[in-house]
Length: 163
Image (tube, rainbow, N blue to C red; front, side, top):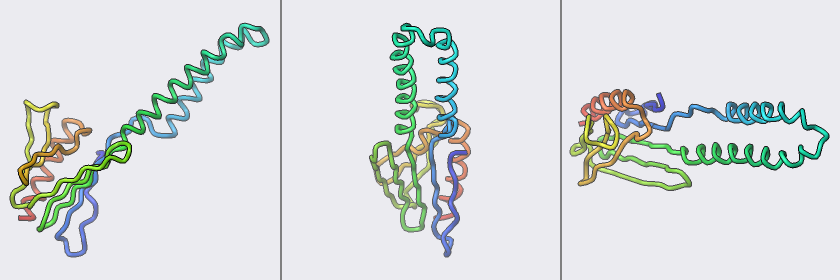
């Protein structure tokens, strides 16, 4: 799952949750995909090797490879999202590190925080939010439906233990 509970603090009064988006194409796969695409495009170009037609086709080949490279690189950059949730007896805080260095913070008293799972009516099924301090914030927008269900149960249990 693309989230993990970090080891508890020494006095066991603090819990930390680290969430990140799932990467279906790791960096090694990115390199292999670009390499395989180049190889597959070069195979038909062997028939025009040594002719002036090659110079007419080559810029389009380079443009296609550059386009795929740029699109995949942009996808990696946009998915650099990390959410850190810290639960302690004094406060609950959520820090979201978004793409391009954007940071969002939220804090509330754990006594007033509620974990809410909106089965319908949200932007996605099983929409998971934390409500407290007169604000409602989304948690794990990039998680799948089943992962949000599982996280809801785990988070509710840990929050109940803190109170």
